[in-house]
Length: 331
Image (cartoon, rainbow, N blue to C red; front, side, top):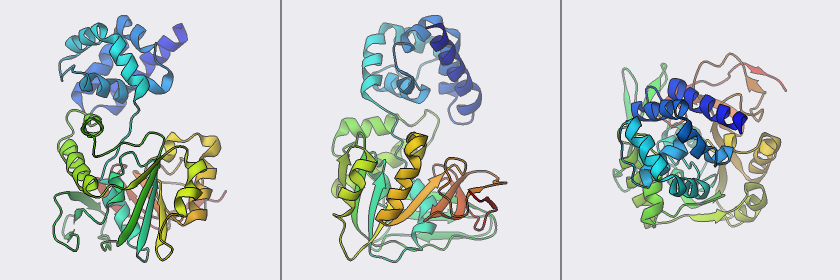
């Protein structure tokens, strides 16, 4: 027990000092309170490690009615509602489903000949399965590129800043089939699931919750095929349902970090065996890159098609930079 308490203190202190600043002052304050309050720590120690992450505990608190109150009021609320928070954290998981990631992936997806069948591993509610239904605005210091769906501007407009001198070369993909696999898929037709997705947005992140709700509305009008279960067990079974005359693209945006390292390579191999593989990951996360793990990487995640790195991007799609041919360490 003392070791677990120490782990909680360390995790929340790091979150308060390193992860939350610049994104959410409120979450930074709540995390600092956890690191200092033994009573709150005794509540969180009732949860297993993967169910006591700060974003999960804080989002559950807000879902259950804590409000965006100061740290002292939040800790008092948590102690009064400890059983409900523990039960909800055991039933929930962090399922970031940011449609803005489509902006970071679109330049690589534009390299794939259509029509496209899109299959996402770790799809959550499937909001990243609709790259053809969103509008895009790529903006650099000197230029701007806008791309709209064939039937006109979308209610979801994804703004992405471009770094470097080269603008992305993009075209609207022709997606004729879309499916996802997730351990706990969310249903965009259920208001509680949409509320949960919006509630995972950190206080202070302006515009994200509204974008998620708008994207959920698009998905709800034409829901994707979503299967619940393990990707390795289901990938081949779901992939064969794609239209035979479409190019199957298996995407893994941001999910590989949540898959145990021991089987991460197997998931990558299965994705590549099924079709084209599209991903955005921390370069050090795996060795599935063509040529090996990049060295001397500046910042951002690597965007790649079939393991070939084409660009760097913000993990959630806020910026993009053409960065092909990065120096690598051969495996």
